[in-house]
Length: 97
Image (tube, rainbow, N blue to C red; front, side, top):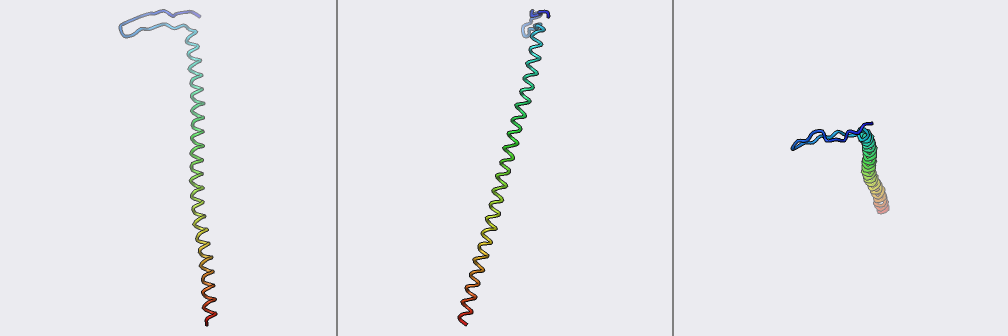
């Protein structure tokens, strides 16, 4: 491997350098490792986001289900109470006659 770390041209606003072949190899390896790490981190973040959304939807659905069953329970209980009152009133009216 040749070393070419020499300033080749320089102007007022821009300077170019030749870079060692060894440094280019390290830079490529670093860029590849960085890309892989970014992909893994992005995948993990997406998985956590999907889990959070799924749990949020499950909680909302469970709340809706609880509300529906509570309404059903209350209506059924009210129907039983109304039926018992009708029986009491009917029995009282029958005993008066």
